[in-house]
Image 1 (cartoon, protein in one colour):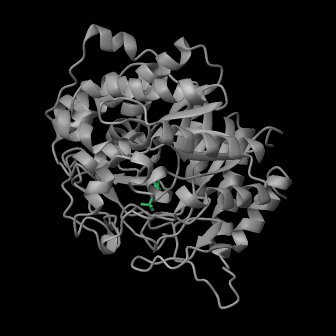
Image 2 (image 1 turned 60 degrees about the vertical axis):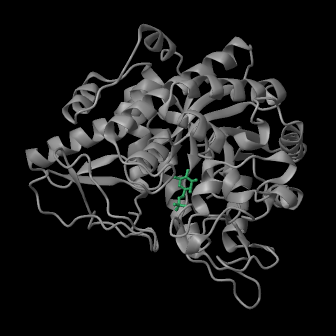
Length: 466
Ligand code: BGP
């Protein structure tokens, strides 16, 4: 059963919805720069206009209110808040004040993500962004400003969105900015991000704010491709390197011994000082979980069908730094989305159980949803029964995990409105609200309610549905 104050919510990220690329003094982010290079994104789409939330937030908040949403997770663009001389851009601050106040007036709990991948380009240029320890100080300065302006009215803070994904795609797979592939750099960048996360949490508490704060993580439970012990060991390696490496730092305040050993085995080291060790003990109040799919792993010598990767037309040859330890396989027992993501509601139950058993922490599901090609019919309806089925099964899985002892405080679907998908343009849609635009035609950006909008409205009304 869901508590009466369960946060039925939905989520988004600044670059994916706002547009208003340089409005009111906003600076360029690494995504503004990356997306404008031909070939980097699907059909060269960018977030220049996105779905124009910057100008249409009132209409969108009214739709959230109509649906009965209890929480809305959105991110703040660092580039709207800080000027290049590190002073505060008051217009940027005022923009998010309007969003936060609008949500509160509509009785919707704002959940603020501090960083959802849109690093100011000047920090990348000045010292390499996340590659340099200086980022900890800059991130702290930026977070402190947010806590100062919004801390008294925002009760839920997500420090970093999916550190595991932005570092993997940016520093191993060359699919996100800054388009690098180097394992040692990846480890350094992650160490700096861990420190930045811990420092922001420490600052938040020092300011005696009473809300909850924690990072969100893309958790994909690892399954072994078979019961052969070699595959099981491969799965252990993957579970360690793809999950516990981050989560132990976030939730226990230190690196797991096994992940440090494996990192060394792969030729990298974590450069840690005594101060770092102490700082990392500042752990969050909850863990945010973004759940989309499970991962199947086999031994390097096994021959199960490998997983196909489908990022629309943006595909670069993948370098697998983990190849000596494990490789991925396709889960042939499951159906997959049009983008090859395994549909596995039970995987969410497994996620919640594993997190509860290892960390016994509060969990906020910060993202979950189905990316699909939606059709706007001639009568302006969108019949997305496939999305309803997907979400219903995942909600059922949460119910089961709660019955088995998990402490889940909320569920944010990805996403409320259709939005810009980093590598899939506007083809891959997730929202309850259809936004009428294509990759190359912005049209009028009209909003239409999909069937899932009404279905989720009922889920909220009945606190979990029948
Ligand atoms: C998560 C990100 C989101 C969103 C989502 C769906 O990893 O936090 O920002 O993009 O995935 O991903 P995609 O748009 O690639 O399907």
